[in-house]
Length: 118
Image (tube, rainbow, N blue to C red; front, top):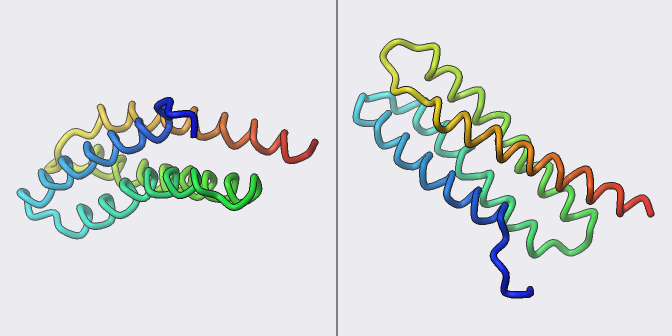
């Protein structure tokens, strides 16, 4: 590594911290099932991004980034359920952060796949 901060690692880690706080709010409202699902998918994004940094090959890197992307999509689902439910905290800020993460992950995946084809 070149010692430079990696933006996707930094962003996905910060997002995981935000998800933990949001899940704490859900648990305070006794929304345990949704909190558990959201905690798993929301923190898995960053875990997969971090794991991709030590990938064994470019193909492995792309695979792990795709998993992170899928986890982000699942997280959107759980947050949208919160958004649509009257007695849940508002997840709009998290949804906006996820849009950014998905754009970056998508770009990383597409760029990496292009270099695989070369």
